[in-house]
Image 1: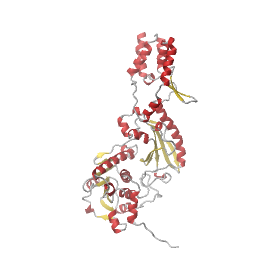
Image 2: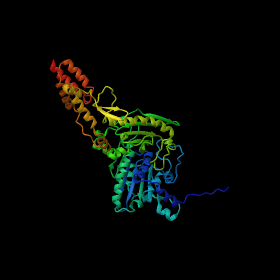
Image 3: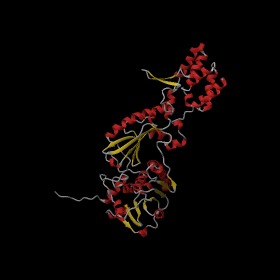
Image 4: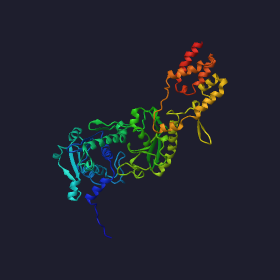
Length: 488
């Protein structure tokens, strides 16, 4: 048997790997992974769209020696089967090269490590000319004109990646500068979401600060944790000694979201599109807005989010791709997620059914009651509601007319129109449930009845179990002090 050493042809392979499907934002994110893996706590992204356009990413990480930077520039510098540090964000040893050269034809990397600069450069035009794997090793005196070098010198340690020759972005663009600037807006949005846990900081981990052209990147929290409801405790899943955790959240109903909240969530389309699982690897967001076919996307589930944390030791089981944009849960994980999906789906439905309020008390009476029949679902007015009961008492001789009025309201309830408005995320305007408004309503109910202290106390105790009085217990307490004191 004859063995043939058949290395890949450099110009063809390097041009081919440019078509892996990176967007500008996903390519930048791939390089940010390298900076974070190198221990950086500050990262600056700067771009210049005019004259000699460039994009640089400079960090204050630990930097690389001459041998390390050469190895980092090698295609396939790391096997996906290698055991890596738990904080390592890479996998295939391709990201730096494939991500960078998917956007440009020239990649220069400058690293400062222990006071020594090391510079390496891939230039696809040089590769095309030489038809070899020609990596350029530049001298230190060639870096003075490099953008961002002053920042690196101030850091005293770290790395700069410089992109130039943006052939693909400039092709067909009326104005390259305008096209570049628009894409940088996408980069900011993407980075704000994908690295939001690093940007916000978490207990036990160093916070990472990022800037784009001097402006700080603000984290986007897709769970609105300050407002959302966490349905269950952390759900650990142990596979081959590695721990996966899942945390389900329910966002507040849209009527309770501010304009800023809606902007964070991507507006009305984003609210629907981004329901589902959010998979993080080493706190870096990989995949979001999918139920992995465990649940269909639905309007009633669009408030549901599940945060899943996976370690890099399970990359092969999750089928993580080169761009870190695809991850599929293994069967053993899917079985555990089904139970979580069932609970969170019901929680999201309940949030819509009760307009954003969590209903955990069986003793709270509602104005509308849901009745399931053989023919379908009907919503009927609660005849035991204090206001309904009061009106019925006042008009006892016209009870048929009162009942007819209630049935008219029930049978003409515009459910279809309400559903359409809900699908389109319209904000429903309701009377405010303030202490004053609820107090006034309660006084009107009490004022129409014969009053004695014992009866009033029983009535107030009954009323506070029904909405809207149950929503503002302070109003009932206030009436107790006022009315019962007057009776004495």
